[in-house]
View 1 (cartoon, rainbow, N blue to C red):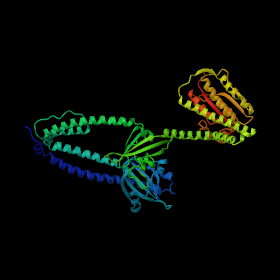
View 2 (view 1 turned 135 degrees about the horizontal axis):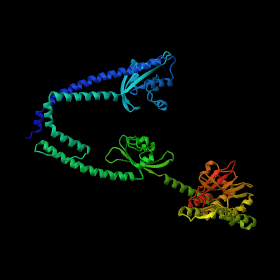
View 3 (view 1 turned 180 degrees about the vertical axis):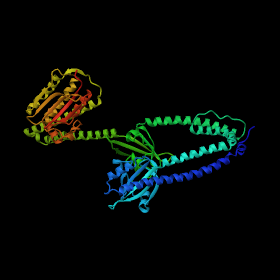
View 4 (view 1 turned 60 degrees about the horizontal axis):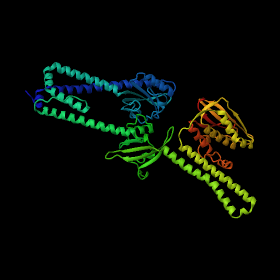
Length: 587
């Protein structure tokens, strides 16, 4: 015989008993809770009065170190926290925090329990502790030292401990109620089971639908309202499962696309808190795993924040993008685009790392400026001398010879600049590996030295070679020869007359290096890191006087890189420079 839900509920009078037991349980829970709170307050006040007595009994006003030690001693019971607060609100000691964390605690002068303690002699307050990340119950009383100084002793206990007592009381009351019902009216319990058994199946199915847990369909018997509800729930479960599968697939696709983007993507809500961040943005901003719910002001600088909705448009003009420097171990140039989310409160921020692009733009601008500057001088001299010759200087043999010699020198200088530029451009464009062959190093070095020996002798420079004849390395003879020739040419130009040059082979750490030492004036530290850049000159005026193009060392660096080697420069004491070329392992 099928009964309706209403009929089964009418037959069950257990509801009245449950209501009565619930009222009793609420009353007992409130009464016991008030007793428990009063007991906790008494214990906290006892702790505070003990701490006050120990401070006031001290002959001299205790130092912060003594007070902090006293707080740690009294707080050995980890369930109670003891804090000493000075009259100005600064924390003198705490049983939880020490050292830097203690000094970093905020001023407590305006805490409600502290204000109440000053005004009424006893303060009580409940609030959330940011230090311990939990709700706390605070008791505060003042202390007055015989030397005239005063302060506050504050004790606290976690409300979670009090709540645990309430929970145990609730469970005890609940279990007692069940036992009472089981003993007092066993037939009512039987009736309740019989009445609500079908509803339990329905409730379980609802929970499965909410949690997404797969469960078999509900059995449908009869044609009453409960059977109709079971049919509807079965249909809802099927539709929800299909929808969850479709949503999961869409989310996987969107997540894959988002995480694969090289640009950093950040979504924020109307409160300007981060709700979404892809892998590129996490790596770029280095926020770790704690980005969920973080305020965007903690991750991005002011120029980006000024473009977000809510910024004062009168002070900061609205723009679709902005560029800023992201500080760090290696600063990055970031271009940020800000777009409001469609039909959703908040904004989308796209971060693009344009550091390399801006560096290339800067190099291109500097290159064009340097080339223009280097070409302007010889061209101007050639034009001026040609005009002077045309205007009548050809009639003066001696003067015309001077002018034509200047024309020849500047034409040669112009040709050297163009040749070096073409060589540098060719090296930068051709990154193919060069053939390397095991070769003895000494003949290559001696050949390069012989080529510049005449120029060295003109300045009375001594050139020494200290390389073992047995030294054999897998290198490219032409490229090593050209690198060393550039080093030698540079050293001869800047070493004063009567100086010394030395080519040697030396191990430095894990590197075997071919080194060229001179005893010239040396290169300042701020210039050494740029010396291998194109057109970089320590003393531009002196370089032009000596006929340098500023490209020789840049070419040497590219030649070394073609072989997979490195070049560098170091300081020599008491004065001078050391240019070196790294070598592969000896063959």
